[in-house]
Image (cartoon, rainbow, N blue to C red; front, side, top):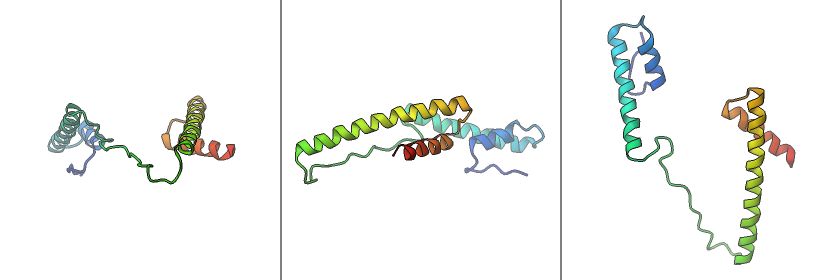
Length: 120
């Protein structure tokens, strides 16, 4: 018999709830867990928080790096150009993967990394 706990995911609770061969008490606990998770997500949305990304992005202080402002500006411009190029490569890899039926993010990422390695 499956047990519903505070660690039970929404997906697992839903599977238990939808399986009509499970005892009514278990299905009721699964429904409670689903409602509990939904309420938590709704409270995050009301506060304007994302449940998966409630963190502050890093801000780097480069003021103490011993380079003059011109060198820093040149490096920044070069890095920005490189990042833009990589985003174009990523978009092309995503499109090729989509056409081939590859949809898992980790697989797309591995292909992207291999394409980047081959470009060197």
